[in-house]
Length: 361
Image 1 (cartoon, rainbow, N blue to C red):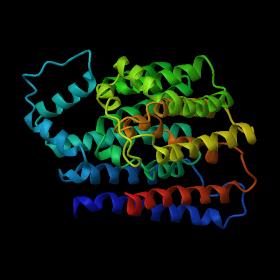
Image 2 (image 1 turned 60 degrees about the vertical axis):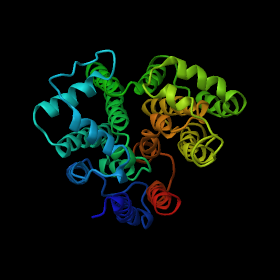
Image 3 (image 1 turned 180 degrees about the horizontal axis):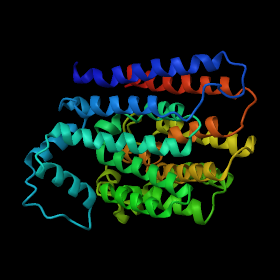
């Protein structure tokens, strides 16, 4: 298969799977789907297929930074490299360990893909035990799932490990939650942002209404004083690419500048949070925390929205996108026709990803 077909084949497969899952719900008169259950067999098989398929992908420019990671791995001499403990030391140890063990680049990519996918699956099982298949499909069908499995490898792996850490902490499993958070930080320091947002939600405030107002205010702040905030965040230096990205600014709508298209995409979880937490008042403590982390991280991205490659900052909230959408559909009572509504949301969600990849991109 041509490397340039991978994304479209995957997106088409997710659209077909979403349709198979959604159609019985659309025809249902039940409040909740009668076949829901806690079986992990299908989600595990689905995730295992993706791990092998994408881990064994050819090294091609079709997968963005895959070629750069492969070149770096090929040149690596693990016995002459000293781990920098002040940088992404977990990533360096993983990379050096795989090379020292004689693993090929495809084996290395498969290990990264396994961490990326299986950590998300474990988090979904923990957060949505009544219907892990539905939660898994929402994650896989997400617009940014494939790009961060093949392009932003470090960022994607770190964010999904943080998602697992958050699932631990929501269950008061503090030790594994802290350890996994440290692993995520040791892979990509940018996850400091969602870590801080999670601490805020757990110990300071999880008032979703207040943070929706803050999210709306961040748009106004970005329009009025966005450059000031970009310079400030660049000076913090918590991400190794922050300074580079925040100093590359352009007025091009579709690539840099104020990303109204990204902002519209980011607003849908905010709308779901408003509908569930404020209009329906059907939220629970876990969902309040999830929404707060999303709102804070996305508000940060809005303040640096003009940066080149701002999608890398946006992903610090977008990895929560499918969770914000799927969690209330599985766990909360938000509508009398929830089964049918879930089918509609899933179809629209997958169709949007398919449209973006086949038409827009």
